[in-house]
Length: 193
Image 1 (cartoon, rainbow, N blue to C red):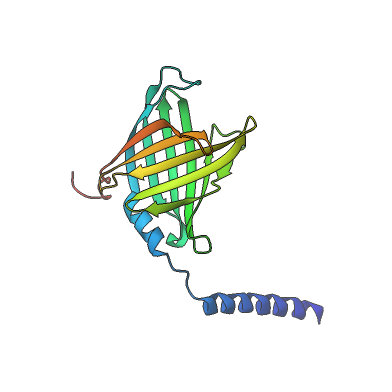
Image 2 (tube, helix red, strand yellow):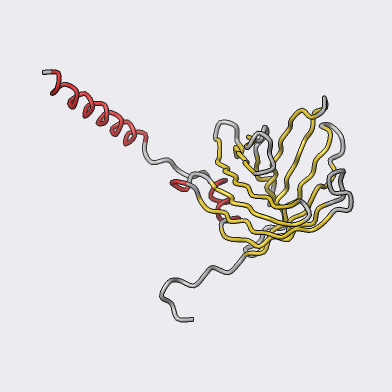
């Protein structure tokens, strides 16, 4: 009796889970996420200008690549980042998704220079007119620090990312500017050169 009961219970539980998922319907991408995916999806060459700072007194340049792809079910946008230059080698991955409860994108960013591995942006990101603005805050050396990243001049083939940072409530200083240029899509397999 016990051996027949276990498969029955497993089948019942899986059936209920499937029925619940069907009743809930298929998740839908928000208009905000659809706009973000349309704006950034693709492979981009990046040229970076780093402003002078304590870490890099003379400032500097770097180059690299960003690849933006829709996440599972098209319900998120994933960024793969790699650059080399004045800051050394940097690799990172970001995930953004629309949170209907907060009315903004939630953003998680992980990179090889972050001592904790990953960060969830405290204030997420949102569209402000034709720009995407992401804001984070944290405590550093007893002070509250704010960072802001602005994606501007977004066209089909280019955009600009500008990163700012400073003490919360004060003026934010530009850290770097990234100019992105869309790379052409590779030819389809089997197509003539």
